[in-house]
Image 1 (spheres, chains in turn blue, red):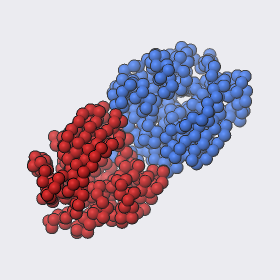
Image 2 (cartoon, one colour; image 1 turned 45 degrees about the vertical axis):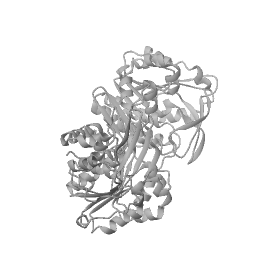
Image 3 (cartoon, rainbow over the protein chains, first blue to last red; image 1 turned 90 degrees about the vertical axis):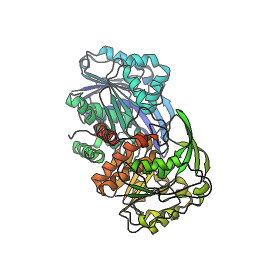
Image 4 (cartoon, each protein chain N blue to C red; image 1 turned 45 degrees about the horizontal axis):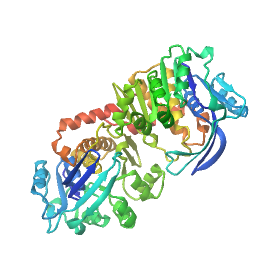
Length: 302
Length: 302
C-alpha cells in the first residue's frame, strides 16, 4: 500500500571526520521516501524553491517516488549545514535557512486523501494535524518530532499524539516529552497520551519498541565504518513503515520485522554521504543484511 | 566446574538519586562470585582487613562460596565511596582507600591450582599474570580491566591479554585500548592481541560480543527502576562465566546464552542497593527472566 509522507526536502552541507559535501540532497521526506521506496510506493508532500535541481526530481522518479505533491514555490530551498565529531552521535547545526520551508502549509492532493499509510515527518505539530484533517481514515499514522516542538509546542504536540498510531523519537526526546528520567517509565507515559506503539531510537545503540502488549529491543547493525549519520532516523522510519505498508500489517510480529528492516536501511544509509547509498541498493542486499541481523541477535532456548 | 575468581572485596558507600548506603559489602570479586554462585561453585582469592564484618563471610558461605582463599590481613579493608546522578551511567568516585588491597599479592592455594575456569577481576595486570602463573592449564580465562591500567600499564596489560581467552570491558575502554574510534575496528584490534572473544559492555544499552567467527548483540534487559548500578559489570561477568563453567562449554551458542545470563544477573543486581538482590534470587526467577529476554529480542524469519 502506498505511503503519504509529509516532511522536508532540503539541500544539506555536511562535514564529518570522513569528508565534506556541499548542497547535497537532504531532508526528512527525502531520506524517508528513498528508504521506503524499496518496499512500496511513496507520495511526497513537501516544498522546494525555484533553485531546487531538476536532477534530484529525476532521482526520486528513478526510485518510483511520486513527486506530484512536491510544491515548487518562488524563493530558495530549505538549507541545513551541520558537522559531526568523531563520536558521530549528534550533529552540531552550523546554519539553518528555512526559506520556502518556513511558510510550508502542506496540501494533500485529492488523489492522495484516501491513502492508508501516513508518515508525518518532523514539522510543526499544528501542520501534522492539518495533514491528518485532509486525509480520509488512514489505517496507520506514524509520526516523528523533535526537542524544539516538545519545548515550544507541547500542548499542540500532545493533541497530535492523540491522533496517531506510532511515534518514533530518540531516547532524550522520550525523557524530555514525559519529563521522566527512567526511559521505560517515560515510554509508558507517552503511550498513555495516544500512540499505540512507541519506537525509541538510540542511534548506534539500537532501538526499543514499546506497546501495551509487547517490548522489543534490537541493537544497531554493527558497522566498522560510518561516514555520515545524516538521515539515519528518517531512513529507519522509511524502512520501518515501508515494510508495514508493503504487508498491510500492524501485528506484533510484523512490527518487529519492520524494526529490523528500518535498522537495515539506516545501516546502509550511514555508510555513505547523504542519501547516495539509498539510491544504489538492491533488494537482495537488504534481505542479506536482514538475515545477518538475525544471526547477530538470536540465541537458543534453555 | 568450579571458578577461581581474583579481585577485590570491599566496603562501599554509595549515593544514588534513590538512596544512600554506608559501608555495605562491595568489590569486584563479591559481585562476581554472588552472581556466579547460582550456576556453579566459586572460590575467591582476595584480601580483607581485620575490620571486615564476619556477617559478610557468613553471607558468602550461605551462597556456597569458598572463602578459603580470602586472606585476612592486619589493617583496614578496601573502601570505596561514590555517587551516581540521574542518568545512572557513570559513578563519580568521591573517595578510595586501598588499605590492605594496596599491597594485595594474590596467592592461589594448592587445591585451587587445577581449577579450569578463572576470572581475573580488575586488578594490576602484573598481578593478573602472577595468578595465571600459579595455575595449571586452565581451560578458560576471562579478564576485566579499566582505564587506569590501559593508561598506566599498557604493555603489561597487553602481555596479560596474550594469555587470556575472553576480555570483558566497556565501549570507552575498548576504544581507549585500541586507540581507534570505530568500535568494531577497535574490537578487531583488541582481538588481534590474543583474546579469542571480546565482550563489550555498554551499560543500559546492552552488550556486543565479538570473535573472529561471530558477532552477537543484545540490548540490556529493559528496567523501569534502577536503584544502584554498582557491580553491574561484575554481576554480568559472574552470570556469564558461571553459566559457561556450569556447562563446561565455550562454543558460540553457549557464549550467546552466557551473555543473556550475564545480562539477567546484572538486571537483577541493579534493581536494589549493593549486592542484596544477588543474595535473595531463586533459579526460577533467573530462568523466567532469561525467557522474557528471548521474547524481547527475537523476531521472525522473512
